[in-house]
Image 1 (cartoon, helix red, strand yellow):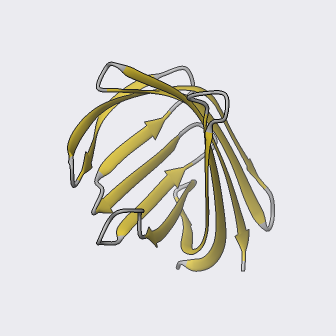
Image 2 (cartoon, rainbow, N blue to C red):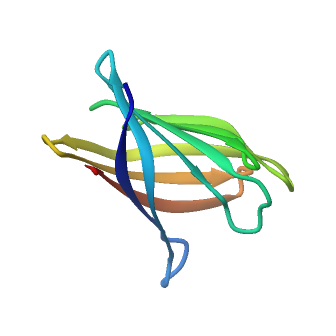
Length: 139
């Protein structure tokens, strides 16, 4: 049975001295099945006309996010591994390679904290260092 949680996602891109930061705070559905955590929420990306369904699946060893809607992709983050995927936008598909350098998941009674650090290579030409912090708390 799903329950509602509050999810805070902070992402940093270190492409230059200033970097870019995104923050999302939203209500999401949460459930745990067979030792894996699941979080489902919807968002309206900038410059898009349709909602995107985000499904996050994770445990202490891996993190996966699937986006469906105006943007479609499937990212898998596993420490010290490189995973290639396509990031499909309304402007067309992009080939993306993700190399995860750090991943931590800490579960407490009322919350879960996730930290991911990774490099993203886009179209084999543009590389960006990123980190994401996710905080999930029961409502």
